[in-house]
Length: 295
Image 1: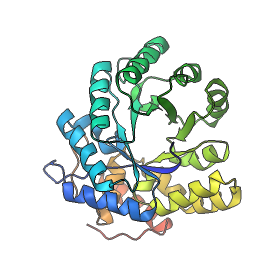
Image 2 (image 1 turned 90 degrees about the horizontal axis):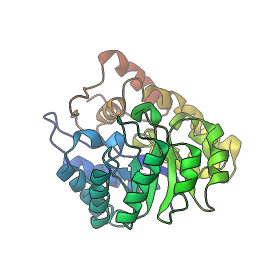
Image 3 (image 1 turned 120 degrees about the vertical axis):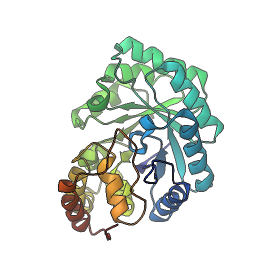
Image 4 (image 1 turned 180 degrees about the vertical axis):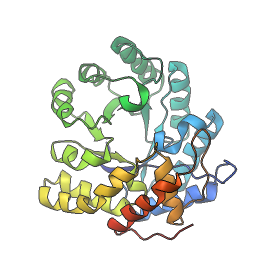
């Protein structure tokens, strides 16, 4: 259902932490015009952990409304409580999102059977296309290929965002999953090779600041144009790395602030980017030929 460069959109905020709706509208327009293939609203990069349920649903509603069908909208609706994930997924469906992205339950370390039952329950409760999201570096929970394969048999579970950066997981997931089940990279540093090896696209942090380049790289990689895809990705390599000098989304929000696209706001316990990392971010933007101006 979804392919190419899908931006894991930040949630703009003012200095006091309130949501900046005007800046959010402008970001949606930016990605429509730049050619991003989909917007993921309220994922990790969107600071979903710091917004309450009302705000979470309102951000999804606003992005869908502003997108006006010009670009697909995938809503982050994962939670570490199954009923909360069901509630958020139902909200996303009611607001008109095209699909939901569900991170594995974090902190409580469920078994593989617990993960299967968690996702099975959400899929049964809400009839919307759903994408599994495996990012053990943040959740302390690894959704194994065997469990992904089981879950792929549920019709409205359509794919997985695999953010381990381990390319050797592509083949077993493909072999264990039903035909047509989609694989998305969640690791910008390895996403070019991920797509070249058979992945369907990427859900990207870098695409927040380099949407055109990420779209073009994905297009070339999907076409099997290895050399050209790597050539487009080469100037982005420092950006892929430096956008994780502190916990995501701290660096990417500061980069967008430098570019004049959002304000400085970020919610505690996250804090603005440390001074020592600001010049490396500027250098990464320059290496990627992205214009910026100090905010």
